Length: 307
Image 1 (cartoon, rainbow, N blue to C red):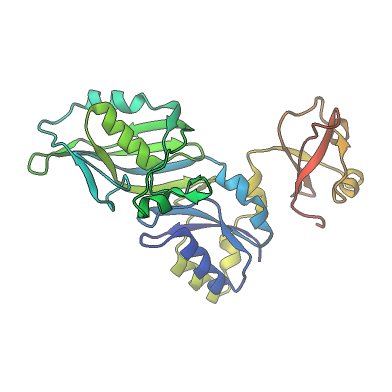
Image 2: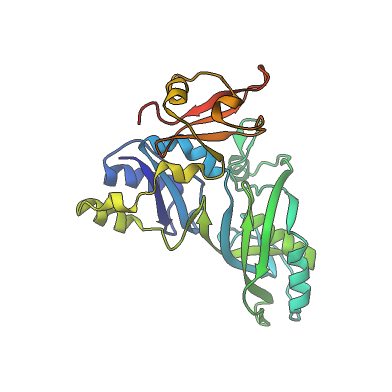
């Protein structure tokens, strides 16, 4: 069995939990996921099965879409609703739509973020959440993130009794973006402590929520022998690359991992980025410029050596 599975991860499970359960359901060990989701977050989790595990890194590099909720009035240790409250400041009057929309618009484009302490980012060989659990402090690295769209999608809800203001949003972002931190930073721009009070991932690696199936459905389809109908081909995982079709002669060289001049692939100029080589309609290898040889490309990843 091989292919990409758009799994709908339910809340209360880690991404690793899903992989563990799928190995039992699908009776195969070669399974990985393309992009971690926190336990409190549900949504699309790309799963790679068999040879498709070779394209995991391309899935994690891809863009993602989320819908969720931001709440002003207090911040938490984890930057979401599961953490302990660390700062409170009651919102005593409702903010205007223009104020909120303007604050959100300021984050569209390339931004910098400081990862949450409760995250898997490594500093000095240890995960940040390990420092957090031991009540240790450490300087966190500043990271760049790309926000393509960040919009309010609901009316503003002000709870005078709780001293909070909440609204729902959608965001399209690049790899490595912490939506929790985006929520906190939006609150800061508005002058209030804030946290991400809800989050669902609606799309990832070209897979969307309409395609995604639950673990229970996977088990059912596996039992009745129709699971293959729900698997996407490995080719789905390399759509970000320029596709180059090769003939029999070039295929004989590519499957042996040869370094080749760019003209061999029918290209008019030397590519600056990786390209995906297709033979008989199937992706067989990813080639990249070879810095040691002028005008030559070398394999960066062999996906198939037989078709």
